[in-house]
Length: 211
Image (cartoon, rainbow, N blue to C red; front, side, top):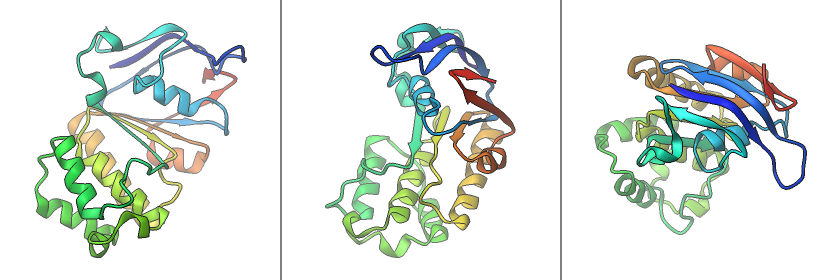
């Protein structure tokens, strides 16, 4: 279980983005976090990913503080609408091969090919990433992250550049990831309709509080 206890985060001398937040994210459940732009959704997810550190309070995973857990970040997949991690001068296939090695992915090539074909980008894998549209890059990056089969999946507005067919495809894969493997999934969005569509439980982030 991923647990927040009196979590507080602010930047410089600004008002706190998160203020005494308490919550537990349950394995096997997708929790949605709805909030307007600037409400602190990305900050919260980056804290859960341990790429930001809290000002006060703590985050624990199965009872241990994140900084005490060996290789915690390798257990987390953080997916947002940015695709800067893909190498523009490499082809889609070369990017996929690189990240398969980096993340030690063991997924069969036949399954990956099936996913890429269903998403409509299999025929573009021999082309440089610099020629891809935003949607194509997003599809490839989400595929790479989902193939990691991480214990914790953090989704931050990741549907921004995706068509409805791709959203439905990823929704089904995420549901299988969460439901059948008892993984922790947190989905954050400024759109309440998407949040309700993806999540079994929906929270609202407002004025630094989860309600």
